[in-house]
Length: 253
Image 1 (cartoon, helix red, strand yellow):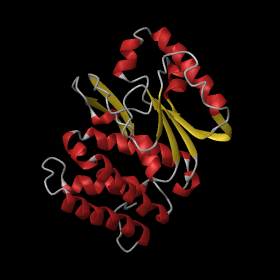
Image 2 (cartoon, one colour):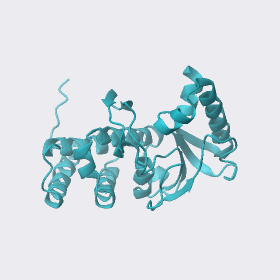
Image 3 (cartoon, helix red, strand yellow):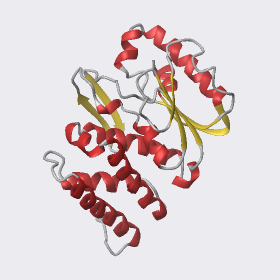
Image 4 (cartoon, one colour):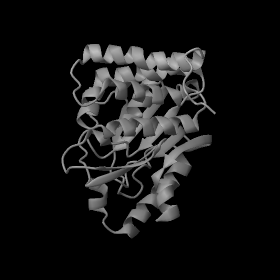
């Protein structure tokens, strides 16, 4: 079957037009993107909106990316670290797999455990699961935008109510956040039972700071058990686990 986009199809055509129109807007604002081509930028926007079935969601997702650029200099960071695009796609994909429409998580309370921070450093390498397969990226040992709190930033702009918890610097973030050492027992006890509609944890066990603090796999498994226990306690009845590295570690670790 021919899978080429037909511009006569209102859904596909609208989707494609969003990518082109927003690309022009971004490039007008930031005219010099020597390594991040116009086509790649258009494809990123198009892939993000394609994750949603309802055409009403296309523009909202696309405009959220525009706001991320204005607030956090997203496209300059994409130019410096192209892997940030894969992180954005990964986070958006998890939302799309958990909620049918963007309106389904509007005003929902979402907990992001180990949300990332503005002080995280790059490990020697990182594997990122994207909707298009796993990508392995090499890194340096310095600061990286890959571990900034992109998930909380995205869901905040999409009108959810995120709470990000992390040990790193979140002082300048506009979403609700708490500084928490997740390596300590009962670190999340300050949060009330059944207080979240959805929870994810996906950054802790790949964090260079965490693996340095807990080089022994047995100690990491203890932390994972604590996080899974807390997720069960904190999730409302009928709530959603968007993604959990802790559960994955306990299953395969």
